[in-house]
Image (cartoon, rainbow, N blue to C red; front, top):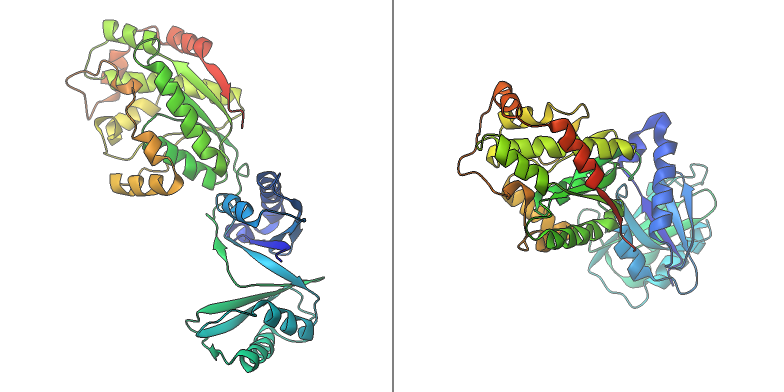
Length: 387
């Protein structure tokens, strides 16, 4: 019976003197993620974590949850055994009973360097014992089965299957950001990559309410946030209706740069909401050259109105890469559902693609931008998932 989950990280191991900070953050995230599944504790050990399972622990559910925790390189349901070579040999052979394979190898990691045998010597001893008992062939290059052994300071563990994690850094280790989350396919993926780089991510959604199907837009965003919860996104998110401000822009600003004026307004409001949350940067789903508002000139004309860094994890992605990745993280099917997009609200027939800063600044001269931002902040609602 499985009594442990051995959890390994990769990138955290390169953090030098700051390593313990990242380890504590990942330990906390793993502990929270495994609540209610029969885990009695998550222990920090040299180079790894050990989740101890109580009676009735749901190993399948634990596996599914750990797959989505940023910071984990891989993990494995493991058996514990006393740190004695003969005990290890017999315990491994016992757990292999009833299995068959064409070839195998043993792979030992020896954290306790005081153990009298080296890792290659342990491999030879355990491997020889198994081969003699089963007749299986040894293949060090491409075995059908790998027997992993880890010798720590108090205990030894072994396991047969490793499960890949998503890697990266633990959520919360890199500070907090505000995510401009639309109902499309791009921004949810940008949020995922911000989470994977250790950011705490607070979504901010803009819709054209009170015009159009703003209720449907809010429902879609709620489901996108819920789909990203398993990766660590905040259950708290902002919803901001900007339809009235957009209508004012239509009346008092030229049509071609209108989409960029919408985006300027959203960045300004998102910056203030992110500051309210203690955040340090904004995240968008922009991909260079994908649409007219994402040329270099358009990006510059929009981001100049905020002082926060604007992070764009997808800047070099093409559309197919984005589609493939959103299918993998579970947001694609929600994103492609029909719904209103505030940037498409009363879309002009002609849009600028390579605007100058002077051109966009001039387009805003007839607008009371400061009042629009104030109105947007006053209308913003903080929602919270109940999960």
